[in-house]
Amino acid sequence: MDTIVLLGSTGSIGKQTLEVCKAHNIAVRALCANNNVELLEQQAREFMPEYAVIADDSLFGDLKQRLLDTSVKVLAGEKGLCEVAALPGCKIVNAIVGMAGLVPTLSAIKAGNDVALANKETLVAGGNLVIDAAQRYKVSLIPIDSEHSAIFQCLQGAGENRFSKIILTASGGPFFGKTRAELAAVTKEQALAHPNWDMGNKITIDSATLMNKGLEHIEAVWLFGAKPEEIEIVVQRQSVIHSAVEFLDGAIIAQLGSADMRLPIQYALTYPERLECPAKKFSLAEIGELTFAKPDEETFVCLAAAKKAIARGGNVPCALNCANEASVRLFLEDKIRFLDIGETVSEAIENIKFIEKPTLYDLLDTQKAAEEYVMKRFGYSK
Ligand code: NDP
Image 1 (cartoon, rainbow, N blue to C red):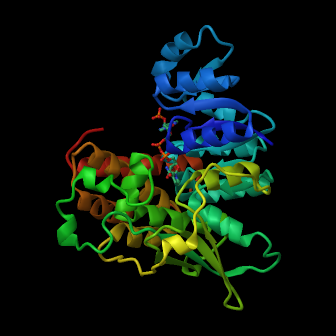
Image 2: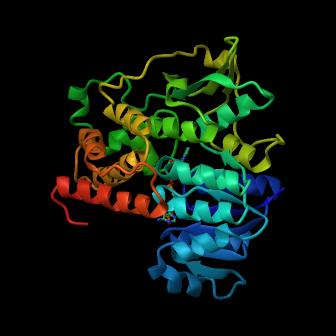
Image 3: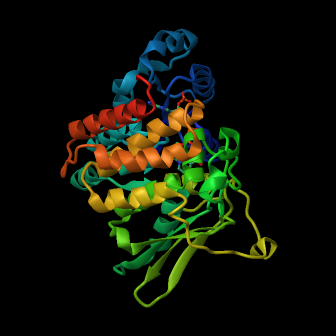
């Protein structure tokens, strides 16, 4: 099995990736976090990688001091992330949250490393650059996101047959069925209480606004070369069907499993092999019923905004993603209300300068413009 470099090792996906590594003795060459030095130190002592990277470079001295008695080399900043992402012959697991994952992903691809990608914001913001580079450097992008892993699994064995439709399932989040009036006063605690999945804070809020499904819609366009209109979003409340594909003859192939990210993470690490997995197995008879519904895009405007963004193309998905990241940050800091997120993102994509074929520098400028737009809208400086 490939040796892995794990970006975002201290997060929800990162920790579950390490459980899978432990279960199957997968070697870890580098571990990386943003600022959680304490957990990164613990992980480094347990897995003894060659490198530990702290993205916040003001914490370099702290981490170095903590690991002084070990053989682990300490690096810092985006430069450090890019350096380990380019280590030869490794599979890079990108479990960073947010667009901060884009540059390290590009670095991995340019070094010829396959990437197991949880970090959906990378594809949303820079899908054109990432897919172009992956094709040029002949590397594989293996999805970790459960829906995209499901689609990827459904396509195994399809041969030359292209899907006619991708059916992207959604849990509907904690506020399924609520009206805008009911959403006006929801609290951060309510938004963080996802019914089926235990995840990091940012993606949990994205699930509550349905922006997560919007980001996944864009992610599917890039990963599977789908046209936006070939993707249908269906609410599957029990989170048992993780997604499906339809073929020309009308046959629908779906992937089912428990709501446990260790399964898609493990498949991305061991693909094409399937091994015993720590995730719980379940009986369909015990589940009893599976329900399906259409998402409500009038209430959950983030989903409509994401569809608009990918239809327009260029740097608009990047503007959407970055306005969302900034808005979610403010919501988590109790500075804006729940409905402000969707309203702000919908407005931001109309106001950021359009660039048809953005370079990396254009995307970084778009990120800055979107963040400034959001902060200004609520009267905050950066
Ligand atoms: P978490 O917030 O739990 O973890 C994020 C990780 O990224 C942490 O290790 C964090 O370090 C690190 N990080 C944050 N900012 C930076 C930065 N600027 N540079 C480098 N590292 C950084 O997120 P999740 O694990 O929930 O999600 C990770 C990604 O996976 C997201 O894109 C999410 O959408 C996607 N995903 C997550 C799922 C889940 O079940 N959690 C399911 C499907 C997709 P630190 O701890 O030091 O802050």
